[in-house]
Image (cartoon, rainbow, N blue to C red; front, side, top):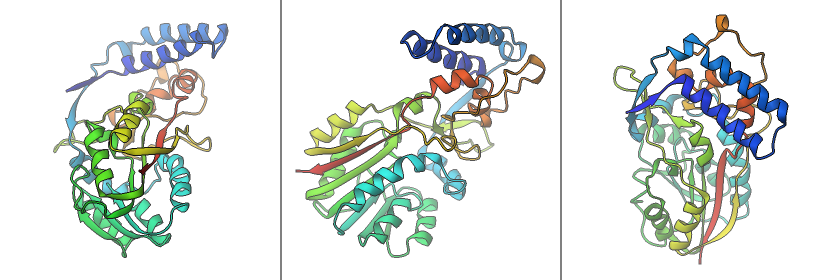
Length: 312
């Protein structure tokens, strides 16, 4: 079980903000404001006396089954970060046989099909695949695991995997599996939630049967982890990007099933009378709203990581 306490999260944001100031990103006034804000937080009865929440570790299948009906709407701002880069890479590749691994509702499968590829989409969630079938009727869509793709060796010209590998404990066997199904000279394009964003709370809910708080198991793979896995599989790096959140809006919409990573608007420091922690389902967004300056400093990190490998 995971224990989540609102005061602990807020103090964590303040701590990250203060460390950025220590590194020279902010001035004395910022540091003094953060220390004063920490004192106010520690003086808050609503925070100090909060019991916290015990959160179960849910499974990927449950989380995405619950998320499938609303996965595409409202739009997840992670898509706004990875799609321009992924599309640019894919648009430079000749049409061929393309595998969309962990295809979800088919957002990359749709783009590949429009570019003239013969698309095979693979996902473990029948609910997600049902929506992909309506979105990309020309694609061959299969239930399967990315660790064991139902494809022969060297069958694909392109493999794409979007926002899925954070749910895999070890990258090496999965990326080796991607390399197995690629032909020589084939291309692997990956996007994933950046490990720094996961650290800040960007995870997927997986509620219990009675609605108990739960989150999908999520792993923080570093840039080096991806690089080592790719090189070990005989892949050459063609490109790597770590974009930050688009400036036009929050990283993730409040109604999305992703929790966390939002950069809230600037707002006055709430008083004890109007301190609104929100329910667990609103965390950590509602908590971030309480300390907007600390949040803006703490979440100034990459939002996704995008890789382009080639099998050589």
